[in-house]
Length: 200
Image (cartoon, rainbow, N blue to C red):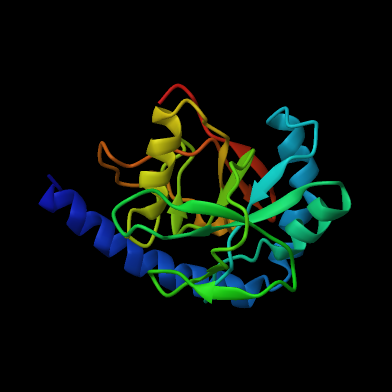
């Protein structure tokens, strides 16, 4: 059951974080390319030394765009995937995708690969967010799709690293969280890679 007080805190933080993120996009339009420059350091920190499958996302609104990083990953042998919501109450599915390939709307209306695209298990999952803290807590849009997906992958014993992509200015001292909220392993920003604390 959702705690009403925590739900209220999250709602207030979402308003503040959306406004903050819009400002950051205006101040730092080059942030996506700067974050891409730190991708190699992120992979080294995560001990992902061999190319695999990286799940990214289609940036919407003021979200920092992972496409420049995806372009770099392709050149180094990585394949890309995008998430697709095919069960509104279940985990997302990840399907292969390459720049230029057609997309269709998933059940939430967001762009996703065609259902004919092969389903894959990513070696690393990059997720958008509104706010984060150093303990690995992430505040998303509130749909729960990433939380359900991360939880399902953990339960299945197929847990890839979960990395939030954000402007460094989206960091908060503490993000309100509930038991079902899944923590991330780190955050890739235009200022560098931040590993989440393991002691909190």
